[in-house]
Image 1: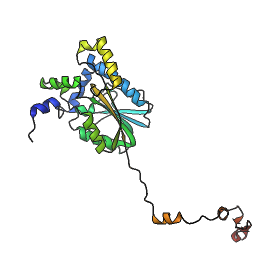
Image 2 (image 1 turned 45 degrees about the vertical axis):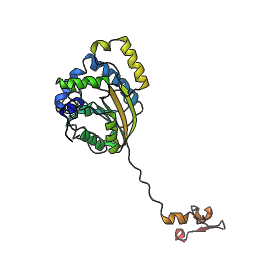
Image 3 (image 1 turned 30 degrees about the vertical axis):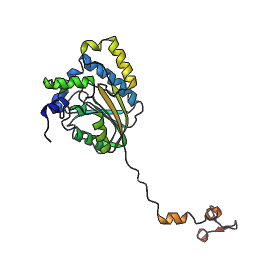
Image 4 (image 1 turned 135 degrees about the vertical axis):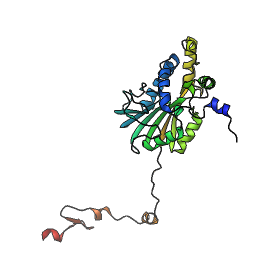
Length: 278
């Protein structure tokens, strides 16, 4: 089956630029009115999730070094990794090769990183490696099935660097997480505002945004997916001798009582241990 270049361009099947080149562009976008408004919505959603998530180590991966979404978390050790250095960046690394041991992170907050990663599946696989069993990942991404998604698709044709990304649908993300032994706990949609500056200030649009957020229509400009890393419990198989022992009558408890100076017999007398007198 031949690939349609126009369809791939509109749907953004792969991020066109490396993540390190997209980070400064997205940092500027999050300072614009639309970006600030979306970031405010995202912060409220993340704060709500963080109230029920605990652990020892929290990792944040974001497409912006200026964004800090995890201040309200009760997890004490919080740090950030990024392909670019910055004042708040703990270490510089590629998103596909995290310099962390296996099973060491309790919670990973991933902010639009999969949207701009050139290999989002491998990035997700690396996150699965570092998150502990029963740990969580909270993934925030642009929703292509939204007004913002339609706007972004049109901007890809005009070579806008902001939208030369890889929007991953919720359905595809859930499939990837399931293959990596994650179970999706909750999906939240937000930001139903039109991607037009003057309309973001409209009282009517803000009221509509609140109502659609409460009803949780799957057409918000962004989504937040919370998933838990599941590990199958090691349940030992019941052996045959266990089945047989279950039908053997139990001996009287008095035979198993051991006084300090001797062993209590069935008659109730204590026989002194011969070794204790030697």
